[in-house]
Every structure is written in structure tokens, then in C-alpha cells.
Length: 240
Image 1 (cartoon, one colour):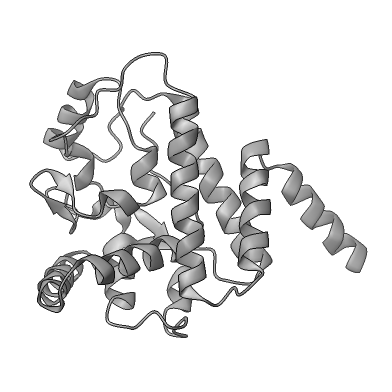
Image 2 (spheres, helix red, strand yellow):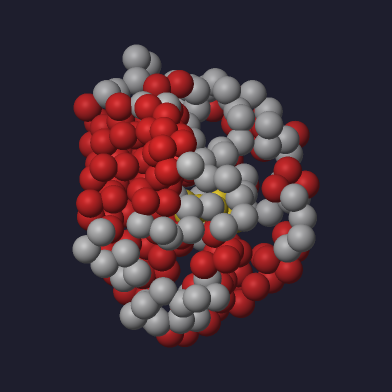
């Protein structure tokens, strides 16, 4: 039985891309120092965000992306995020907003979640913007989740059509290698979470924020953890 378990783990690792393997290795080593520290988890996630951005800069697409300032069609899709991404966003909010601003945000998130709670991802109303969308730009752009970093379009009209049709699965022409890189980062990170025995599932972003935002980030709250044990990580909507 022991040998069978070892073989299955080895086989699982060999299915990872080289990029995902590297992300897993770096993340697992980083988390091994104190896997239950939210601050360490957030530091790791910020480092991975920066590494993915650097990867994009070093591997530019063959043609210019249609995305740009003021374009927010994709912000009407409901994205999922892992525990590290949620903790990172909450830390960012707590560092950059006043208590009054956080109260207003919490009220907005609660209203938002009342509309989506218990509804499957694809049945969530498509006229519902991200809770962090302000003036056609994400207020947490610097720490936006991997799903948002993966999203891009080569043709703005594709995004407009998907938005007008309120169809989250409408085809949007994308650069496959760019999208795959973000998936590799998510995959590597979630394998590292498995390695240090932290939950590696994901949750719809505002539901996760609502669960974590009221708490101090001195330690992982036990009540958060079951939220991230339900869903398979890395399931971005298929838009290619």
C-alpha cells in the first residue's frame, strides 16, 4: 500500500508542466517555514503574481491584446480564487482602506452574495459586476486573482458580444500560451498547498472575501478552511 501511494504521487507530479513543477517546488519550500501563517501565504501569493507578470513580459503574445484601460467586460464574470489569493486580497484591503471603507465594502459584498449564494457558477446573473469594480477598473488590480490575470482577448468585439448576450461561455479569441501559464501557476500553487496539508480548493471570490475580511490575519481561522475544500482548483471558464 505504501509503494502504491508513492507511485500515485510520483505519477501525479509527472503530469505537471515544467512551469507548474517549478511553481510547486518554490511554493512548497516557501510554505514549509510556517504553512499556517496568513502573512507568509500572502507574501508567497504576491511573489507568484509578480512572477507571472514577469513571465508575460518575457513571453509577449504575437499580436497586441485588445484589453486596455476602461475595458471591464470580463469583470462581469464570477471568478474563483484559492485560499492564498483570498488572504492576499484581504490583506491588501486591510492595508489600503479605512475602517469606514471596509464597512461599506462588507455591506456591498453581503448584498452581492445574497444574490449568488446557492446558485451554480453558470447560473449567476451576468449583469452582476465584480464587487471590486470601480469606474471600469478593479480597485484591487494589483492583487487580482490568477483567473483575472489569465483572462485576455485578441478581439474586443468578442468580449462585447459575450457581455451583451450575458453568456459566460461565449467564445473569446485568446492567446493559449498566456492562459496556460496562469493555469500552470494555479496548478503548481495548489499542489504545494496539498503538500503542506492546506486546503487547495477554490471558492467564488466574494464569498471567500466575506468569510475572511472580518478577521485579523494573525492566524488561519479554522472556519475558513472548509470553504476551500469543495471545488477542484483551476477551473476557469472555457472561453477559447
